Image (tube, rainbow, N blue to C red; front, side):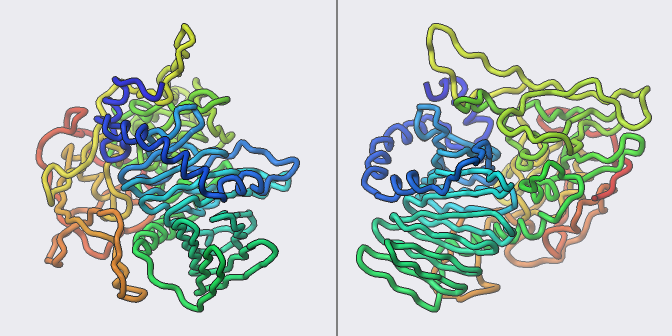
Length: 514
């Protein structure tokens, strides 16, 4: 059983910007299952990568990496026996899974902030996600088809292997590359760093600003890189992480993936006697971090909680959520890394010296139970006790930030300083901003030949610059002053958000970025 029809409908309604769970997309998955099997059998690298995935004795295989960004239509095979299924941001990826894009774009984020970007019509496998006995993280990715970008510019000591058309590619730390696989032809372009390519008994070193073309019977190395149609999208995504993933002393747990989204979509608050804790923007004291989400089944591990919020990775796999009187729900990092087993709740805590005001931990929705009579369990189960609140365009050119959306629906990095916007929403219940649709562009760098394509994103203002007045800054500034040099006027509609009421709480006290 893939997904119960009722849950499929609810998922489609709940996450329309995120996943392809509608009946049409579901039938598309079923309709292409046979062709995907045929492709995997026809392409030799699928078997080669599994047989030579780089595993060593003593490796631990419990690592999970993050599906960190999803745009358009894509599916993930989580080894549930259902083949490719609908997916969403923050879905854990474990060893042996497969990810494919149709008319969509995907980003996979590794523990050290390394990223893998999949352009449309791409298919990759993850034959190895291991932790060496030395502490080194070893990853092997098999590119079956399509265009994939790898950015290891934050990597210092981990191992990364690529397989493409039966060729093994050892990617050096601090490397940024693009690889395109079309049938038996592979083109590797190295923007920075170097890659060692093995082809039978031959070894070729591809250095910075070089490209390697591999055909059935030929190998060509060129001292140039042709611009690719998705280069601008890859650059925009990398720039976002470079800007917002600064080291954060509160991250803890030895994993830094997800920090860029924590920094953009929220900030740490100095809660006085409660200490410092992180809280997302665009929430009120009535918002609960577990009021919406999905239980995803992982064979051998059971159900794992997946949050729909764009920042919803680290706070749901480590640390503790607690309710702080006068502030609402907040997250404090620390403790063990929960991985797939992120269902344990710590309760009865107190913070600081304020024992008279106990800090409560939230209760999570009940873990789904296996059905009786030998029926297969549902692989995705929607959970939550409140309507989902989105920030979104209510009409073309007008974006509405809603209270208690907690950033859901807000594109990352392109609509300015969310701390200022959050303060406006806190006072009025919602806020509107003029926006326009834009595609990634390399006009500020690189060559101009070739067309750049990518997912359409919303940007603040209009394509033609105008005199925009600013609005009062928030009392809760984020770690950065904003994502653009200009400010865009906000207006409030006077309407309450989907969860009701105007804020009434005013500016939140004691805020300071960390």
